[in-house]
Picture 1 (cartoon, helix red, strand yellow):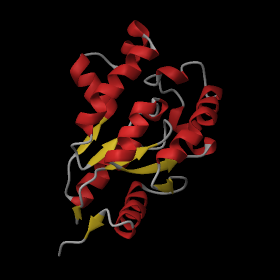
Picture 2 (cartoon, rainbow, N blue to C red; picture 1 turned 90 degrees about the vertical axis):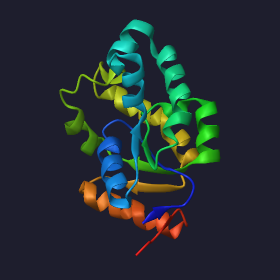
Picture 3 (spheres, rainbow, N blue to C red; picture 1 turned 180 degrees about the horizontal axis):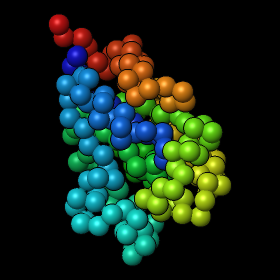
Picture 4 (cartoon, one colour; picture 1 turned 120 degrees about the horizontal axis):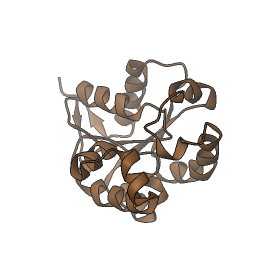
Length: 176
Protein backbone atom coordinates (compact mmCIF):
# COMPACT_ATOMS: atom_id res chain seq x y z
CA UNK A 1 0.00 0.00 0.00
CA UNK A 2 1.08 3.50 -0.58
CA UNK A 3 -0.13 6.72 1.08
CA UNK A 4 -1.35 9.43 -1.25
CA UNK A 5 -0.04 12.80 -0.11
CA UNK A 6 -1.40 13.45 3.36
CA UNK A 7 -0.28 11.64 6.48
CA UNK A 8 -2.70 9.51 8.47
CA UNK A 9 -2.98 11.09 11.91
CA UNK A 10 -4.36 9.31 14.98
CA UNK A 11 -6.15 11.46 17.53
CA UNK A 12 -7.97 10.55 20.71
CA UNK A 13 -7.95 10.37 24.45
CA UNK A 14 -5.22 8.88 26.61
CA UNK A 15 -5.56 5.06 26.58
CA UNK A 16 -6.99 4.94 23.05
CA UNK A 17 -3.80 3.21 21.90
CA UNK A 18 -2.65 5.89 19.45
CA UNK A 19 1.05 5.07 19.77
CA UNK A 20 0.70 1.28 19.49
CA UNK A 21 -1.79 1.55 16.63
CA UNK A 22 0.37 4.16 14.89
CA UNK A 23 3.46 1.94 14.95
CA UNK A 24 1.48 -1.05 13.67
CA UNK A 25 -0.25 1.00 10.96
CA UNK A 26 3.08 2.39 9.71
CA UNK A 27 4.48 -1.16 9.50
CA UNK A 28 1.38 -2.37 7.66
CA UNK A 29 1.47 0.34 4.99
CA UNK A 30 5.26 0.50 4.75
CA UNK A 31 5.61 4.02 6.07
CA UNK A 32 7.18 6.02 8.86
CA UNK A 33 5.66 6.79 12.26
CA UNK A 34 6.09 9.81 14.54
CA UNK A 35 4.60 10.38 17.98
CA UNK A 36 4.30 14.03 19.05
CA UNK A 37 4.97 13.25 22.72
CA UNK A 38 8.12 11.30 21.79
CA UNK A 39 9.35 14.11 19.54
CA UNK A 40 8.91 16.56 22.41
CA UNK A 41 10.75 14.32 24.85
CA UNK A 42 13.59 13.79 22.38
CA UNK A 43 13.95 17.52 21.69
CA UNK A 44 13.54 18.72 25.26
CA UNK A 45 15.40 15.93 27.05
CA UNK A 46 12.68 15.57 29.68
CA UNK A 47 9.63 13.33 30.03
CA UNK A 48 6.24 14.89 29.36
CA UNK A 49 5.39 14.64 33.07
CA UNK A 50 8.53 16.61 33.97
CA UNK A 51 7.78 19.31 31.40
CA UNK A 52 4.30 19.69 32.88
CA UNK A 53 5.71 19.80 36.43
CA UNK A 54 8.50 22.26 35.62
CA UNK A 55 6.93 24.50 32.98
CA UNK A 56 3.16 23.92 33.11
CA UNK A 57 0.55 22.91 30.58
CA UNK A 58 0.70 26.15 28.57
CA UNK A 59 4.41 25.68 27.85
CA UNK A 60 3.83 22.04 26.93
CA UNK A 61 1.01 22.94 24.52
CA UNK A 62 3.34 25.45 22.88
CA UNK A 63 5.93 22.69 22.36
CA UNK A 64 3.22 20.47 20.85
CA UNK A 65 2.31 23.15 18.36
CA UNK A 66 5.95 23.64 17.38
CA UNK A 67 6.56 19.93 16.69
CA UNK A 68 3.26 19.20 14.93
CA UNK A 69 4.37 20.47 11.52
CA UNK A 70 7.56 18.38 11.68
CA UNK A 71 5.59 15.31 12.75
CA UNK A 72 3.33 15.63 9.70
CA UNK A 73 6.27 14.73 7.47
CA UNK A 74 5.76 11.11 8.56
CA UNK A 75 3.32 8.69 6.95
CA UNK A 76 1.54 8.03 10.26
CA UNK A 77 1.41 10.39 13.25
CA UNK A 78 0.18 9.67 16.78
CA UNK A 79 -0.95 12.86 18.49
CA UNK A 80 -0.80 13.65 22.15
CA UNK A 81 -4.37 13.73 23.43
CA UNK A 82 -4.41 17.51 23.88
CA UNK A 83 -3.04 18.56 20.47
CA UNK A 84 -6.51 19.45 19.15
CA UNK A 85 -7.13 21.88 22.02
CA UNK A 86 -5.12 24.53 20.16
CA UNK A 87 -6.90 26.18 17.24
CA UNK A 88 -3.70 26.52 15.19
CA UNK A 89 -3.18 22.76 15.51
CA UNK A 90 -6.73 22.02 14.37
CA UNK A 91 -6.22 24.31 11.37
CA UNK A 92 -2.93 22.62 10.45
CA UNK A 93 -4.44 19.15 10.77
CA UNK A 94 -7.40 20.15 8.60
CA UNK A 95 -5.07 21.48 5.91
CA UNK A 96 -2.40 18.79 5.87
CA UNK A 97 -3.64 15.50 7.34
CA UNK A 98 -6.26 12.76 7.19
CA UNK A 99 -7.31 12.34 10.82
CA UNK A 100 -8.69 9.21 12.47
CA UNK A 101 -10.30 9.65 15.87
CA UNK A 102 -9.68 6.53 17.93
CA UNK A 103 -12.55 6.43 20.41
CA UNK A 104 -12.26 4.56 23.68
CA UNK A 105 -14.92 4.02 26.32
CA UNK A 106 -14.35 4.72 29.99
CA UNK A 107 -14.68 0.99 30.74
CA UNK A 108 -11.81 0.23 28.35
CA UNK A 109 -9.67 3.22 29.35
CA UNK A 110 -9.88 2.78 33.12
CA UNK A 111 -7.88 -0.48 33.38
CA UNK A 112 -5.38 0.73 30.77
CA UNK A 113 -4.67 3.81 32.88
CA UNK A 114 -4.61 2.10 36.29
CA UNK A 115 -1.27 2.86 37.93
CA UNK A 116 -0.03 4.89 34.93
CA UNK A 117 1.91 7.89 36.25
CA UNK A 118 3.09 9.11 32.83
CA UNK A 119 -0.02 11.20 32.10
CA UNK A 120 0.18 14.48 33.99
CA UNK A 121 -3.40 15.64 33.45
CA UNK A 122 -4.70 12.38 34.93
CA UNK A 123 -2.64 12.51 38.13
CA UNK A 124 -5.74 13.30 40.19
CA UNK A 125 -7.60 10.18 39.13
CA UNK A 126 -9.83 8.73 36.47
CA UNK A 127 -12.62 11.28 36.91
CA UNK A 128 -10.29 13.76 35.22
CA UNK A 129 -10.26 11.51 32.12
CA UNK A 130 -14.03 11.86 31.77
CA UNK A 131 -13.82 15.63 32.26
CA UNK A 132 -11.15 15.87 29.55
CA UNK A 133 -13.28 13.77 27.20
CA UNK A 134 -16.23 16.06 27.80
CA UNK A 135 -14.02 19.07 26.98
CA UNK A 136 -12.34 17.53 23.93
CA UNK A 137 -15.01 15.40 22.28
CA UNK A 138 -16.30 18.15 19.99
CA UNK A 139 -12.74 19.12 19.04
CA UNK A 140 -11.96 15.51 18.04
CA UNK A 141 -15.17 15.42 16.03
CA UNK A 142 -14.24 18.66 14.22
CA UNK A 143 -10.84 17.42 13.04
CA UNK A 144 -11.77 13.82 12.22
CA UNK A 145 -12.11 12.38 8.76
CA UNK A 146 -12.87 8.92 10.16
CA UNK A 147 -13.80 7.45 13.54
CA UNK A 148 -12.72 4.01 14.77
CA UNK A 149 -13.68 2.57 18.14
CA UNK A 150 -10.91 0.61 19.85
CA UNK A 151 -13.18 -1.11 22.39
CA UNK A 152 -12.84 -4.90 22.39
CA UNK A 153 -10.48 -4.94 19.39
CA UNK A 154 -6.91 -6.01 18.83
CA UNK A 155 -4.36 -3.58 17.43
CA UNK A 156 -4.41 -5.59 14.20
CA UNK A 157 -8.19 -5.25 13.87
CA UNK A 158 -8.01 -1.50 14.52
CA UNK A 159 -5.28 -1.13 11.88
CA UNK A 160 -7.38 -3.08 9.37
CA UNK A 161 -10.36 -0.78 9.99
CA UNK A 162 -8.17 2.30 9.49
CA UNK A 163 -6.71 0.87 6.28
CA UNK A 164 -10.19 0.08 4.96
CA UNK A 165 -11.43 3.60 5.79
CA UNK A 166 -8.32 5.19 4.25
CA UNK A 167 -8.76 3.20 1.04
CA UNK A 168 -12.44 4.15 0.86
CA UNK A 169 -11.48 7.83 1.32
CA UNK A 170 -8.76 7.63 -1.35
CA UNK A 171 -5.98 8.23 1.18
CA UNK A 172 -4.30 4.85 0.47
CA UNK A 173 -3.88 2.98 -2.74
CA UNK A 174 -2.96 -0.64 -3.09
CA UNK A 175 0.33 -1.39 -4.80
CA UNK A 176 0.68 -5.05 -5.80
